[in-house]
Image 1: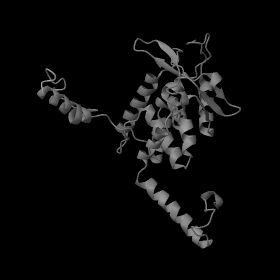
Image 2: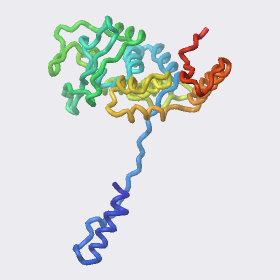
Image 3: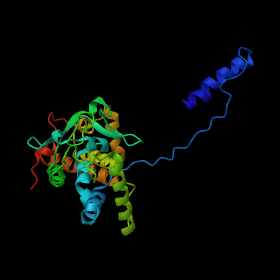
Image 4: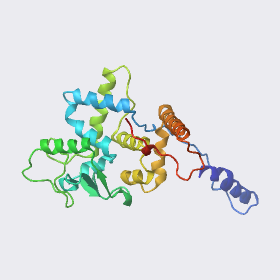
Length: 276
């Protein structure tokens, strides 16, 4: 690391140089540090999600992409995984999506199939009612192809461009970018920079805030390391913290009313209460 070079390696070689053991210190060079100017991805708040989806739905041009955005928000898939989905990967009876590959395009325009980002990326994702409906809409509006495009043994891709070729990440990224720019032009309060990966972060945050078990969330996200999944909690803000504290207070008050102490073996859980 930079700290090791500055604090350990460079002084050690300087000592060897001073003692005339070596002719020169190979680490005697200027070390410039490039500042990290990358923008941190943020998750959309529930209100921002609602506003963005409503704007997309009512836009005469971009409304055609509404289902793609809903699927990304409702599954947490990587954009290349969504582009790689074929009709055979959808099980409408069991309401689940098989994710075991992704579609990628090189700079010269060649499309090819590769494995998911990690071995844990191979997974099944359940379809919510909204995701189910969005896939149904896409397939209903999908033009019948005289000959399906075959890429590395895969055919029947769900997302097709106007020429009948499978869409790649760049197609969706540009749509989301232009859509976000148009939204910000027409609204006083702008949205943050949105990319397809922001939808993935948003899904993860939504599931975490809903109380999903971390191991289950790790599986759905296709993360090989749970530490990556845990990073989602950096998106939790003051409102989320206030809601959690309120829940804890309500549970504590309920415990007192029912005469349950902290020493009891079976603590009170939220699912023990029926909402009326």
